[in-house]
Amino acid sequence: MKQQMIKFIINQDGTVTEEVVGEQGGECLELTRSIEDALGSVVTREYKPEYYNNVTLQHNQNQDQTQATTD
Image 1 (cartoon, rainbow, N blue to C red):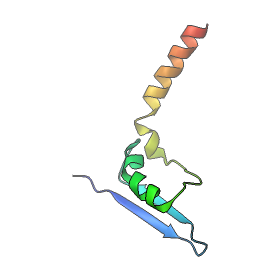
Image 2 (cartoon, rainbow, N blue to C red; image 1 turned 90 degrees about the horizontal axis):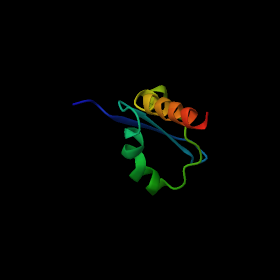
Image 3 (tube, one colour; image 1 turned 180 degrees about the vertical axis):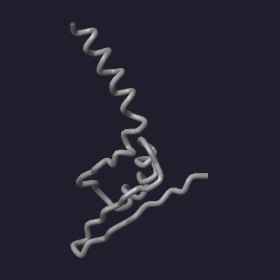
Image 4 (cartoon, rainbow, N blue to C red; image 1 turned 45 degrees about the horizontal axis):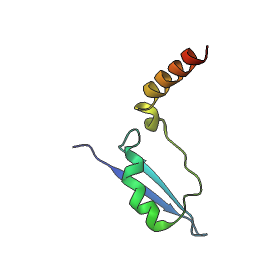
């Protein structure tokens, strides 16, 4: 079983930064959803390269299909 970890940094002004380690693709969003809901609004979200590991191929396929239909 792979290890999952969520790192939190709580700043003096009360803002919270979280980082997911050990997940790829959209799995990180599912892992943190309930925590983010409890904390409040997400102000910004930055994706690490691991997020795109499972997404890139699908995006490229959709882009190719869109270009083929508009030409």
